[in-house]
Image (cartoon, rainbow, N blue to C red; front, side, top):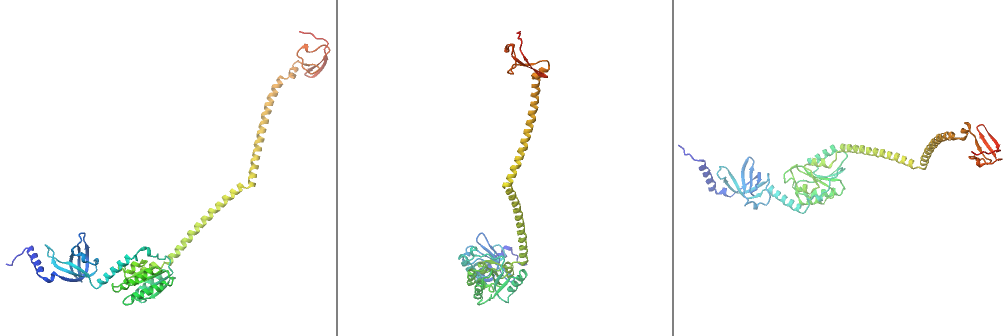
Length: 399
């Protein structure tokens, strides 16, 4: 019967095999980083893959100090370390002591270094970025005359606004001499007083896009007086030109969408502004009309003629009031006089005379009240109801 072993025995046997293989104690592996995780403990967990083959790995905190760059998924690297089984498990992984960039990784390292230097110089700061004109008419383009980028920009521009003028500087965008050619294109278009410049190309590898990571291109963009939109590669591609430009577009087509305003919407906006302006104007006119009418009424009310007419009206009113008062007063006094006359008539001597009495007065028309006021021979006047009698006293008898 074959020997039977426990899981622990087999795991230990495998571990001994790895331990006894001196090549696995120090081995260098080339591959692409994936499943990257920076742990809070300081350790770095990752996988390194090549095609369908995948190897898990770990770099302890004590070894991370040797890293000259920050790991990212997709980086192609060379990992040096030991291959060992995980304790208590039949799986194995690489315990990394050093990690360096390979080929493209070296370019990436140069990219990160230049990016850091330019950022420290302030070339990425928003304070140096110019706004992109909303209604650009003259647009410069620095790109390859035969690439897909220029065709995309032309197609989008024609669709959005057929009246926009595009000025192309045909430049190399890849290989030797591309960076100086791009710089010349930026400087040439900057002297044409254009509204905005698009600098870019289609997608590609990091080597294909490297001209846009050169320091001379970054400085040319930074020193350009015309606002620049960078449009390099695909949406996930980032170059130094993207960070130093006034605005980054994810693709050349997107750059055209940003730079070229849509003519139909522009006309709609103008019509909307015209309508709004007219409404404000009409409202203002109506308001001023009401003000003019109000001022006209006010002027009329303050005019001498109107004041005189108003005074005349008041005088007529006062005259009517006075006439009414006088009429009422006359009526009142008339009634009162009638009452008094009636009372006087009741006390009148003539009325008494009419009842058989007479009024006797002396020669001085003084009414006699006593026989002692006259003497024999005086003339008397006797007033009766229907006449006056003149007489002379011949005799006086006292009572």
